[in-house]
Length: 526
Ligand SMILES: *[C@@H]1O[C@H](CO)[C@@H](O)[C@H](O)[C@H]1NC(C)=O
Image 1 (cartoon, rainbow, N blue to C red):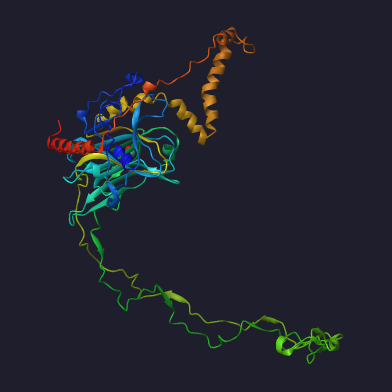
Image 2 (image 1 turned 90 degrees about the vertical axis):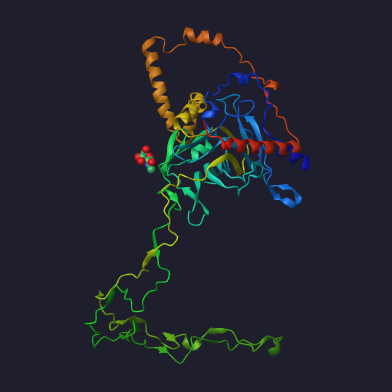
């Protein structure tokens, strides 16, 4: 167990990926990484950045790692981009954490923050995240100790559980009065996001954050959410200016009755509140021949207690009841009760009519006082600088692929990068996308057939009006030329291999990593 963990933890995508023949045909982005703070395609050898697995412990006493989920560098299952590699979250139901330093610390100054990456739920997604974190720059930051408590400036990307589909944009805001940090969440877009999670295709997530505090969120280059850090976050960045005075109480004589009984009208003298709602019907008399002194049922005089009846054991014996023979010719026996009818004299409780209360003071509210916790921050964009990107994720479904991660300060760089990564693949996926759309909206088939089929039929019938009903020469020609497809057999050499470092080396690597990043963070960009 420990050996496995050691190998896993020390696993570092450093330098020794064998280059397959197929790989040479993959398009490589020309964007020079030194124009970006972070640019990782996972296709270069060595990788642009060193990725560090978290060694954060769940139980220090027993050396149990919290993040025991596996990460691998693998080829995407997307058929539109054969040979394209990405970083893959492998282990269903486990915690995963991996991170890498930026080439230079990103400071929130006069330039935008542009963050972009691809997520591909290769096995679909039941419940789990695909978001990225921008880790806050600090002397205490150690990538090998990356965990859920590591301070981050921004968290961005997809998250799904059950029927809840989200694209998070969360930033950590520093309260200038208390110095404490609070997460501010962008409101979720109103659009239905489910297709991005269920269509078994990679998707491109872009966050643009501008120094004027506005933000844009795009998926596959389509704007799905935008707003302002000052107005569209929950909870709001700035607390309310005034609050209700908690020491204020409602005065005893506060009159908040909008309506009162009309004092000028009193109960009429003849209003009898006591009259019952129902009375015995006075028009009905006891029928003649009704015998009130006889019960309708009497104990059977001929019945006898069984021989084995014991008064001690069974209680007093009672004869069963039979119809009273004295009643057999009567209209009825027993006490006679007249039927009840509604009482015409019934009035109920007297209620005085209501009038508007001339002394109405309105609903009482405590007075407003200046909020002692109020502060003004008109520049929430200027958040904590960022020195690393990381994935700290749990997912019930494995094989989540991440690719083409870019952090830069210019939307033009993002656009150029997109053309050279994402854009290279888009033409291949068009037909698949159209077919996927019919899954949800079968009537689209009609549209497709109409838009594609009709012009063809018209064209054919105009060009060859006579041969419409028989096989043409051309059809025979194509039949003859049918040939079996060559097998797409896989060359084992096409699979990449990794080198895994021992745990001693991993500590050295981490030290070098930290030194390098700190040195770099001291340098100015460009
Ligand atoms: C959001 O986008 C819409 C449409 O492009 C635009 O009209 C609006 O001003 C944007 N809002 C913000 C806060 O940028």
